[in-house]
Length: 627
Image (cartoon, rainbow, N blue to C red; front, side, top):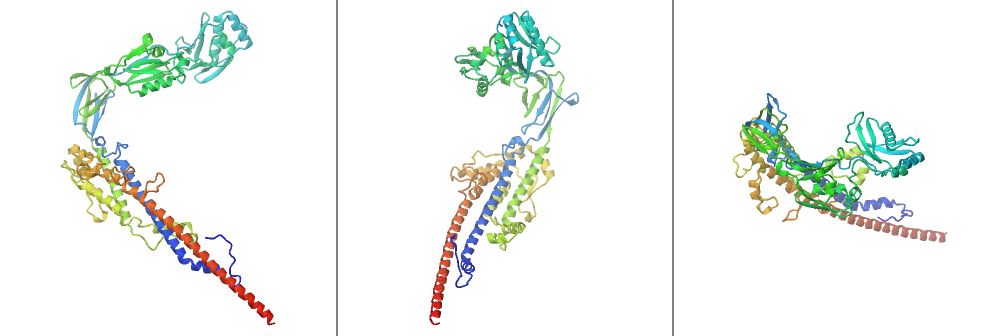
C-alpha cells in the first residue's frame, strides 16, 4: 500500500478512510482467506513431519542395527538361552559363558585349564630413555665458581616444579657436590629420595623408594631452565627428562638425520627425521598388521603387542636400520615374551586353542583363570528377555497404529478456521491457543498415505512368510476382536511362552528371515515381501515412507519426506513446500491488487473533494457578486 500522506474529507466532511476500507473489504477477504489456506498447509506439513518422526523412532528402536538389543531384524537379538558355570557348587571365576541365538541346550564339563592364551609381546628390555645423566662436567673449581655466582637450580617431579639453593662454601670434589645436590633434592620433594650419584666427573639422577635402596619407576623427572651457566658447567640441558617426549621428532630424540626404516610382520615402514614418535606409533597402529605399538611412560618402555592371542600371531621384526634398536625393541635390549595357546580339557578331551574365547555348541566359553578343579557348564532355555522385547514391540506397534488411525479418523472442525491477523489482535494468547487447537483438527483426515501405511503394516504381519510353517497367530499374537480398536494386536502370553520354549528357531526365522532380493530392487518388491520375515517387511514399509535417500529408479525419497520434507535442513522441494511457496506468491499478488485498488479509490475521492472545493469557491464568488 502507498505510504503517501493523505488529507481527505476536508470539503465533503466524509470519513474517506472508513469508506475506502469498506470498498476494499472484499479484496482484504481474499488476502485473509489465502493466508488461512497457507496456515492450514503449514499445519499439515508439521503434522506429516510429526508422523515421520514417530515412524522413525519406531524404526530406530526395533529395526536398526545400531540398537542391537532390540533389533528384530537380527538373529543375535533373539538369545533365548542362559548359561551357568559352577565349580564345587559355587559360581566359577575361571570360566564365563555367553549364550547366543545359536546356542544349544547342553551340559558339559571343563575338567581343567592348564594354560591361558596370551598375546605376543615385544618390549624394551631396558628403559627406553633411562635416568638423567650429565655429560663430563667441567672442573670442580669451575662448578664452585658458578655456584658462588648463582646457587639456584630448578627441577620438576611429577608435574611439581621446585627451585633449590645449593651451598656456596665450595666443594672439595664431585662427590661433595653430588651429596649437597642430593640433600637439597630430597628436602624439596617428599616421599621419594631423588639422588645425584657421582661417577668420576659424571652425575646420574636416580629416584629411590623413600628410605630404601630400591629404584622406583613411574615418575616423571626433568631439569628446569634456571641457571643456564651452572647447567652448562654440569653438561646438562634444560628440559632433559627421564622419559621420552613422544611429541618430539626422531631428529631431536635420537639424532636422526635421514630416513629410518624397519619391517614388522612383512610390512615395511619408512619415516623421515622430522616425523614425531607419536606419528610413528600412530602409523604402525593404523596399518592393520595385527600389532599395536605404544610407549608406557610409567615404565619408560616401548611395546609391540599382537592384537590377537596365540602362537599363530607372533610378531616378526625382519629388518631395522636403527630406530627400533634405539627404542630398545630390537637387538640385545629387546625383551620378547612369546605368545602362548590356551590348554584345557573339556569332557575328558585334552585340547589347545589360540584364543581364550572358545565357541562350543553355539555358546562362547571365556577362559579367565587356570584351574585344576572341574567346572560344570550348563546351557538352558531362558526366553524371558526375548518375550519381554516382543511384548514391548507389540505395545509400540499398537501405539503407532492408534496414532495413525486417530489422525486419519479425526474430522476437521470447519467452525474454526485459522485466525486472521486482525482476529488475533482482538484475542488473548490463551484464547488464540484454544482456538488453534480446534482449527488444526483433521489436517490428515482420511489421508491416503497414512491409511496405506497402516494397511500395509497389518498385511505384512499376517501374510504367510514363504518357506516357513509358522505365523504370528501360532505364537499367540492376533488382532483384537474389537473392531473399534482398528488393528490393535493382543497377546496370549501362555501361547507365546510355549512357542518361545518349544519352537525358538522358528520364532527367530519368523521375525528375522530376509529375502535375497534387495530393498532397492523395486521391480521385484513383491518377491522380497513374500520371502521377508515380519521385521524386514515392516522395516521396508517404514523406509518407503521415511527414507531420506533417493530411490535408484524413481529418484524419489520416502513418501512422507517427498510430501513434507525432512526437519533437518531447508526444505524447498517437497510437495508441501512448493504449495506453500505458491500461496506466498498468490498472497503477494493479492496484496499488490489490494494496494492498487485502495490507491484508485483514494484518487477518486480526492478528485471529488477537488471538484467540490472548486464548486464551493464559485458559489462563494457568486454570493459576493450578488451582494
